[in-house]
Amino acid sequence: MKQPILDEYPSLTIEKSSVENSVEPLRLGQKIKGIRSQLGLTLEEASQRTGLARSTLSKIENEQISPTFQAMQKLASGLDIDMPQLFAPPKKVGASGRRDVTLNNQGKLHPTTTYEHELLATKMSQKRMMPFKSFVHARSFNEFQGWVRHDGEEFLLILSGEVLFFSEFYEPLSLGEGDSVYYDANMGHALISTSAMDAQILWVTAK
Image (cartoon, rainbow, N blue to C red):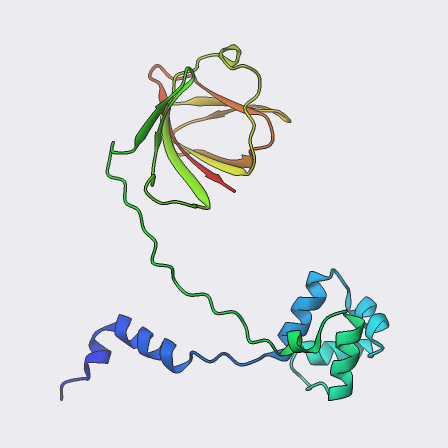
């Protein structure tokens, strides 16, 4: 007997399942634990502020018992929140469907004296990351006007060639094809090629 179409297409099965389970359970204990964590309180500190026993709080957070209305009042008062906050449904996170494709060598060029950048995914606005490929022209740290630094964190992957990675608080680091490094971009940094040909790297800067 032929199976229903949902069995033939897993993506449709997932979609059907997601619709059927679109209403998330409240999970009050997790909600309370999340609020306590955001406030930076230990169970002991929350116990002192709410007047509830530490063991009781632990059982509530682990969904082992349901808090009474009186306990809820103590929690709201001790954690300095409004009672409705404890019952607010969890926020649903849906896929935005955003996508931006950059074909090979079709990025936006941005040359400098030390690097030749190719910016990727340039059609997408308000990105949380900025990816780009670069050829490293610099051969000496002296070619830079001091340290390069900017907000955010950065990841680089050596696509070809070899480089020397300078960073403000560490010794220079030799990197070759396939090597990578993730670092705080507020820390001074710079990159020079040490191979015969200019090294090519993938850079991703995150806010």
